[in-house]
Each structure stands twice: as C-alpha cells, then as structure tokens.
Length: 337
Image 1: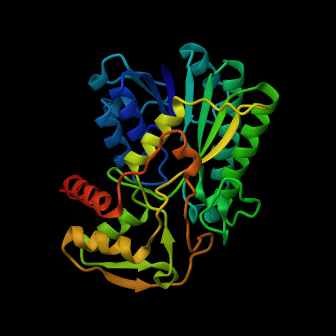
Image 2 (image 1 turned 90 degrees about the vertical axis):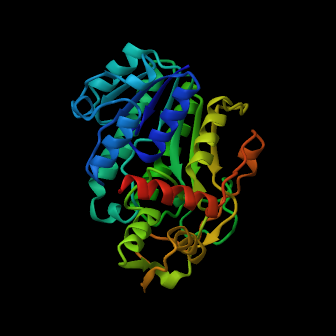
C-alpha cells in the first residue's frame, strides 16, 4: 500500500513510519516541524528514517530516504496549506491516510488557542477534503483519551458521552470525530478515529512526564508531581500503539449504515503516577526529589481504556510499565550521552 502519514516527525508518526517501511509499504511522511518542542528531536527522528536535516528543513521539498531506498519520501508542509496539500494527494494517489499531525498538549492549548484551531480543525478539514476528492480507501486519524474529560465511569468506553471536554485540545479532538462522522455519512469515506491513551517510549515528546521526570532525576532536580500524586494513567507503550494502528489499517470499518468508527487504543491496565515514577527511579537506580503540586487546569485525575472492541480485531497490549520504562530510560541515556 501507499500510505500518507502526517505528523511523521512526531513521536507516534515516526515509529509508525519506521514500522510500515520495514513491512514493505511505500510511505510519504508529512510534517511542518513546528517549534512546540525542540525541533532537534524531530530532525533526529527523521534522520533515523534516512532524511537528513538539510533536506527536511525545506518546505514542499520531497526527499528520498536512504535507509529505505525509494519507499520513503518526506514533505515539509502545513496541513493548513489548502493550495499544496491537494497537489500532494493528486500526485501520489495514496491508498490510505493516517493523520497523526496535530498541535499537541493540553496545557499549551490554554495559552495558544489559535494554533489548535489552525492545525487541528482547519488542517483536519483539508485532510477530509483531500480524502473526499481522491477516493482514499481508509482515513485513520488520531483522537485522544482527553475527550473523556472528567468522566467518572471507568473504564472509558467509546459509547460514553464525551460532550464535556475540559481543554481546547480535547474539544478539537472531539470536533475531529464529528467532522469525520459527517464525511463518512455524506461521502461514504471509511474513517477510523483512534483515542490514544498516555503514550510513552523511546523518542517520546520532551513535554511529557517520562522525559520531564527522567531529565530531572538524571540531574538531581525536583520533579513536579501534580494533584499531590493522586493520579492514574493508562500508560501505553509506543510499540503497542503502532501495533494497534497497523491492525486497524488492515481492518476497514464495516458498519452497515456508514463506514465510521471510534476505537480506544490503550493498555487497559491503569497505573498510579507513583508506580510510574518508581519504575523510572528503579531504571536510574536513583530516587527522585519530588515537589507536590495541585491539579493543573485541563488535566484529569485518571484515564482507563476499555480496549475490548479493538481486542476483537486482534489487538493485545503486551508491554507493562516496568519493561516499557526500562526501554525508554536506555534510549534516554543513549540519546543524551
């Protein structure tokens, strides 16, 4: 298959591209490489895919990745680019689109709301329009566990009401689900929304807890523990997330009235923040210095994925936090050496 992966320089997008290429697919990666976090990490990910920084820095430049011969191209482009995105679709005749590009971050959305509307709403509309006009066989797109808000019922099920987001980031993800529903209804486009749960692992984002905690512990600095540590998360290792996406790539929605579905991809076994910190401490052989703080705006006390529906398609979460954190810390030490 020929697959477009947007957000290819991002955490999940990078891992997905690498896995798809190893399986023999032709992949075009798209990313605008914004500076929400350190762009050096994004360029380092692309380098692992065979794209050198000098090529990746140029907008609208298509580069062949040396590691994968003619199977990988990278294009630097904004999803908001309504002029050039349709050209990219028309030239490449993609079979499948996996839209992982988005302005990420719950807390950042409070300070910079405009960037979320531009990327997550306008950009996603452009993706939908391109899929509509190019007869894309399947659109998969990243949603988020944040759409569940302060849902008290656990585990979180895709049948739960998600009409009460508590951050603009979550609101944009819920909007994506509604927009996809409309396009599936009007144009019979097969769409799959994937609600990811607290993804972590090697090459992870520097604004997420594993990287922040590891950075602080390695330097003997304080780590910030919000809500006085009374939080739990459905921590999901990156390899499990990629496996889930690849399973869904091979399984089109087959709902009778229209080809639209939403699925959780998580571990299904939430862990306390304390347990996660302890796993990092064990991996470093060093105890963290902790600063306990109140809950942050837009954050939630717990997440827990009901993954029964995706398990019916063959998904199984295999990596627990001890193994996953150990893998992450090994990479962290190597990357920062």
